Image (cartoon, rainbow, N blue to C red; front, side):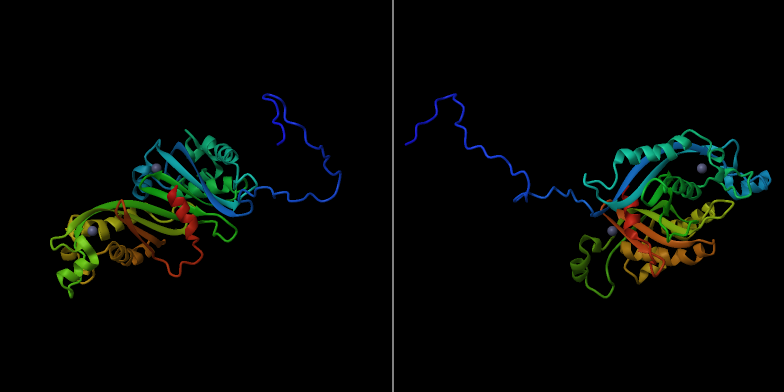
Length: 334
Ligand SMILES: [Zn+2]
Ligand SMILES: [Zn+2]
């Protein structure tokens, strides 16, 4: 048996071997990749408050008020805007698409600081209405202007701008995107009851399919309805469509007829069609598509949230073209 080293004594030195001065290094592990090169989409949120006024100098007061309602009242009014910026690209060796600090500073420098606490009509030349190419700083026109400021600095996929929680605009980015196109969404709600059952089936069969939703006397939901239209913004009004007209259509054709009803009995369509969230959303698309087309925009999407746990979405335009729904979903999740 070899003698043990004394307690506290340094270990006996082993043979010293110098590393080879040259030649291949055996069994060296590759550097960690940290996802390098793999694509990912990221979002960043920023908020700012600003005021604006919808008043075209070539129109008199009465006509401005007729077209833009209280938004035409001087000296203007303000909003707390929320901006969601979506970007995409391959991860770098640090595991990031971009350094978020750089993203934050770019958005602050290009958007939040120039616009924050300002009167939008006077901030950027796009909104100088004394110029023939000036346009009103609507939500969708502001989204386009912000995209123009951020695109040189960030790998944009798109951005969403909330003027308020029930009104927002989306714009996509990239070389194949129509530079004047924008999406405008409004949110509203209605309360209604329904019963999920097919007339030709027995109660037991219906309960096997629809569970508690087939109980004979129905139940109700507070439905949240998002309607998204798309189109080119008007060069002067900055609008995809007349917002008040869009809100009126949704109110007249959906909210008023559906609100506080028993859908199966009070809405003729659902006498023979099971009013699942999917079928309600599809019916809303059918009700709105043609009237919205008459406003100059196209109905793009209807999203009906039935409960905190379920929603149905219908893309009204077919085919969906190159809508890149993943990009829009990322914006929605922001
Ligand atoms: Zn406003
Ligand atoms: Zn239900």
